[in-house]
Each structure stands twice: as structure tokens, then as C-alpha cells.
Length: 248
Image (cartoon, rainbow, N blue to C red; front, side, top):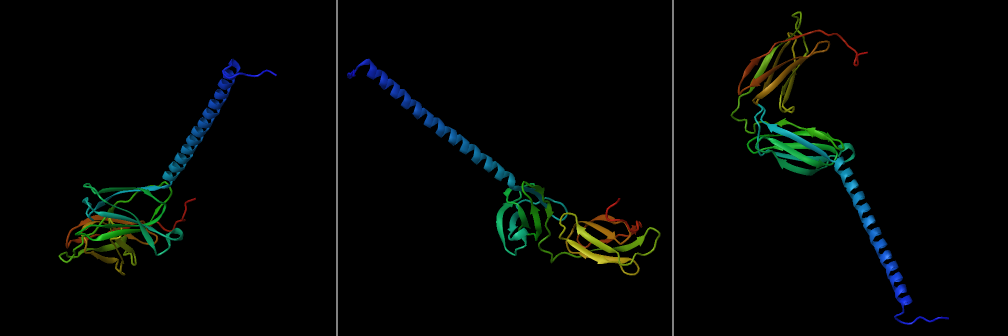
């Protein structure tokens, strides 16, 4: 059997082959590691993007009850806990403030039900309960906040009558006074046997007054109620009779 001598050409060739094989193995391992790393990065990015799409965003504007924008209003989002937000407990998710134009925006809110609270020094506060955010929702929540100190204010009053289009008094009609910027500022009353009503509010602002009664179309008017204002509003309701909930 032939013996190889150290430094012979055959031994050098063997060394080259072994070195090549080892370099190939090393390259293959590195390529595999790189491939796995890229795959993991792709999976993680996909999951993160999917999670980002699950979050909701809310933008809005905060004003007085007359529609003037307010800066530096504190806006806080409290998530109502429990199944479908029916638990009495809640947790603060985020707090922000309005900019110089009364605008705010909140992103990355988990889906669920919220209590949204608005407050500002020198003003009162208002809040929206069970404000629902679904997955990937993008909602707008504009709101007005009332005057905080009312000791110097005089009640404003809106009075009038509700009649049918043929001039008959409509007894027991519902008359609603609601602020155009804050639905929490609402008053309701019923008309008497002569179709008369009277409503009052301590908060100056722009208001919508509407009258409704069974078998009649709703009629509405708008007013800018100043401090101590006295407004008369008469409504003539058009008869529409009874109709099906869904037209055929």
C-alpha cells in the first residue's frame, strides 16, 4: 500500500477539499441563520402590523356651548372593564389636551367601551359614557363644555305652543331643548291641555328646540340663547298618521 508523505501533492489536495467542504458547511449554516432571522423578522412585523390595525383612533374638537374653540382642555379616555364594559370599574388609558385650535387626537386605543371626560379650569366638565371603539375604528368626537361658574347667570327661557297644522292644540307633546354642542345639556317637558310649554336653562349657548308627538312629523327650531334670554317658539306639527317601522 502506498504511503503519503507530508507535503505531497495528494495531501495538499486533500487539505483543499476538506477546507472547501468546511467553508461550504460554514456558509450553509450562516445562510440558514440569515434565512431564519429574516423569516422571524417578517413574522414579527406581520404580527405587529396586525396588532396596530386592531387599535382605534379618535379625533375631535372641544368648544364652548356657543361653538367657540377651547385650548388646553383635558381629554381623558377611561376604558370600562368587564364583559362589554358593564363592570363598574374602569382604567385610564390615555390623557391629552386640546391644541390652540381646540383640536385633539388619540391613537392606539384598545377596542372596547369608554367613558370620555372633558374638563378645563374655569369651565364645568362633561363626559360621554359608553363611547364604543371597535377594532381599527376611526371616530370623531366633538363636544362642548359648559360654563363652570353660574352664580352670575340668569336663567334663559323658551316658551310657546304646539298645534297641529289645522290649528288644534296638541296636548302631551314632547318638547326638547338640547345644546347643539353638548347632548348632555338637555331639558324636556310636555305640553299642557292648551298645547303650551316652557323650558329653561342656565347655560348660554346655541340650542335646538323640537316638538314631537305620536302621529305627527317632528318640527324643530334653533336659537342662540344669551344670558337671561326669553324666546318664544310656536310649532305647527304636520299629521303623518301611523306608519310601519320599516316601509315595504
